Image (cartoon, rainbow, N blue to C red; front, side, top):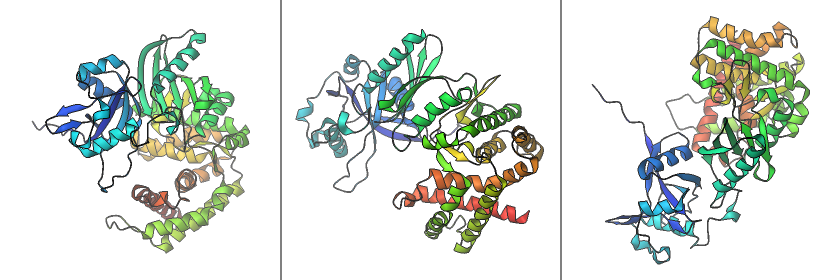
Length: 461
């Protein structure tokens, strides 16, 4: 019987510190000292997998601090991935490496790989780039997790809750954090954000205040961290369900949320929500597609289609007509979730909670429904009847606001316009350096090809 192939893994060399950075785990090999290396599944969250692997390999409880930014090598060589970590119980590091090395006595020839020596020098501050609080971000110092957990315990106490010591760290960086804390009753989530997602903090506070039935309950905020503590939403993650009934319920709740948001568009935009109103999207139409023409012409790959300038111009013209139709139909400006995927929805018997509002927007509500519809087709049903039932669950909620013919027409235009709304508002197409990064440029080209296919479909109707 053939064995299943092991999923691909990435190697991370870790700088595992103890006692506020005064102790560092180095392994002795016949070829010299080296930083320990952990291998974790590719394309998954780094922090929880590194912590889990450290526990498996060394039986150590660790927390991640951040990926380590490596200074360019003078030789121009590439470098491995490095991550800063900290042992929660410093005395246990001696069990893994009982013979400590005096870090001040280290030399380049002590190491099996000179790149490790350079990284250790950076991390220990020998070359002036010491890892410390003023290196940027509220969590850019040793003991950051202890500061967070102490604050969480302080917020839980008045609620009659206590942290039971169990946690799962999903994200760690100098200004980002996402940690699940188990309590004596249920779990809570701590989240803090930095650039480029600072908007998520004020948007989350606004939604918790104005539309609390659709988001997890907010327990406390920490403005100096751009952080907050929220109760864990009870129910099933939508990503776990292929039941069309559950998805239809989500579509109905999305419509209810958006209708309830019609009183708050100005406040949402003031809080940082992307402006995806028709007039705003029309104002950047020419600039966006001019950039897309340049990016498309730089394509060297021959296995996917390279659109011509004329074809991209056709997409632009169809987009302009669709946005003009939005303005003249009087579609209301509502809250959108521009990253609406099944991982951002929790469904229970009596409610839906929508998570992660970094990409909130205000504009035609049918954008978010289109994102949800694409996931529905992948996970539940790609039959016309199944899709029709799902669409009707959403549209019926809008019949008190829009006549059915208008709603149907807007839904027909959404596959074209929703892609543009996301790309023009949430992606850095105005930044000449970022937009030409190979992966991002390829993503832009794929989005333009999708818009072209939708444009052709509308023309054929």
